[in-house]
Length: 345
Ligand code: NCD
Ligand code: ZN
Image (tube, rainbow, N blue to C red; front, side, top):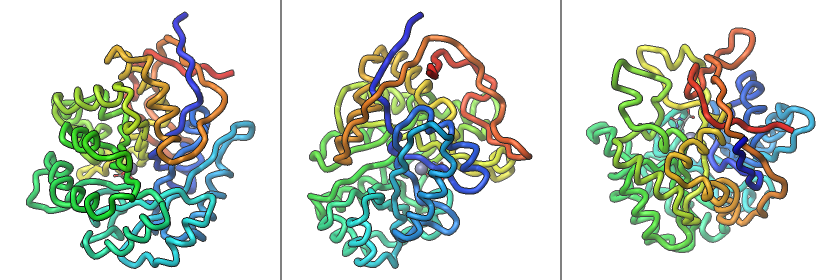
C-alpha cells in the first residue's frame, strides 16, 4: 500500500474552544500534531498570561492519556493590553505570540482592535521583546466587498506595519489570495503566512453553487479558483515562509446551519489527510513535510519534532458529525470519502 511518512507535524493556527467542545476536538488534533498554536478568541478572550496558563491546563486535561501534545498559547491583543503584560508574555515559556483581530472581523472579535494605528506602541513592545504578532488580515469596513477584505487590509494596514516594525516577526494568518501570497513572498524573513486545508482544496463555489453550504463558510471567505491555485503553488513551493495552520474552528452544527450561520470550518478530524489530498493534487506530496513539520517550527524558533507520522492511501468516509450528548460538530467533508488515512500505531 502507498504510504507517506513525515516528521511529526505542528498546527500553527488552531481553535479548540473550552468545555465540552474542547473535550470533543482535542483528541483529533493530539493524535496527529505534536504542538499547536492555540487561538485566544474565547468568550471572554484570553488577554493575560495568567488566563493563558489556566486555559493551557484545561487543554492538557483534554488530551487523551498516552498522547504527547503541547499547546502553545497566544494572547489576544486589545486596545488595553499593557506593556507589562507584553513583558510577562515574553518571559513566559508557554506564551508564544499575540493575536491581532481587527474589531468585528470574525468570530469573537468584538474585543479586537478598532484603530490599528493606536496600538503601534504595543507593536513596538512586541518588536522589542521579539514576540511574534499573528494577524487576521481583513478590513471590517462594511462598504468593502467581503471578497476584497484581505487585499484591502494589505494595502491599507499591513504595508505600513511592516515598514514601521521591520524587526517584528509577523504571521499573516490563513492567507487566501494571490495578492497575499505575493506580498508575503516580497517581504523579508520576518514575515510568514499560514494556509488552511479548506483554502487549498476549495474555491467559493463550494459555499454557493448548487445550494448554500454553511460548513464551507469561514473567514476569510473562500475565494475564486485562481487564488486557490496560487495558494497550492505557495504551499508546495518549499518556500519556508508558508506553513501549516488549519484554522480548524469548531462550532455547533445548528449555529452554522442557521439563518445567520457563524464562520469557521472544522478540519481537525482529518487535518493532515486533507493537506495530503491537496498536495497530491498539486503533484507535490514530497513538499508536505517542510510545510507541515519544519517551516513553522523554524519561524517560531522552536525545535523541530522528533518522531514521525504515517499516512496510507486508503479511503474512508468522514462521519456526519462528531460529539456526544447533544453536541454536534459537522466536520469538513462530512459524509464524503477521503483518500488518505492517518496510520495509528
Ligand atoms: C474562527 C473562529 O470560529 O474562531 N472562524 C473562522 O472563520 N476562521 C475565527 C477566525 O480565525 O477568523
Ligand atoms: Zn482562526
